[in-house]
Image (cartoon, rainbow, N blue to C red; front, top):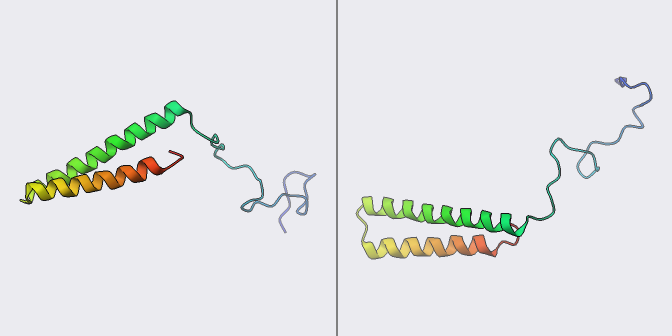
Length: 92
């Protein structure tokens, strides 16, 4: 068994370094919840991402020669589904 560099620490007195052992990690713990301003800002940025995804889908469908009503149907469905997933989350 390898000896510790610290003379006062033996192999039996070292804490276990497994999951749930309460040992410190390199990353600090995150706060339990975000502030209302930060949460609102994150939701706005995510909503802008949804709009960007839908614009990209519409541009790809238009360049492939799809019908306009089909483009509208697909883009609106995707935007509603993504927005529902985004806004249904409590922690965001």
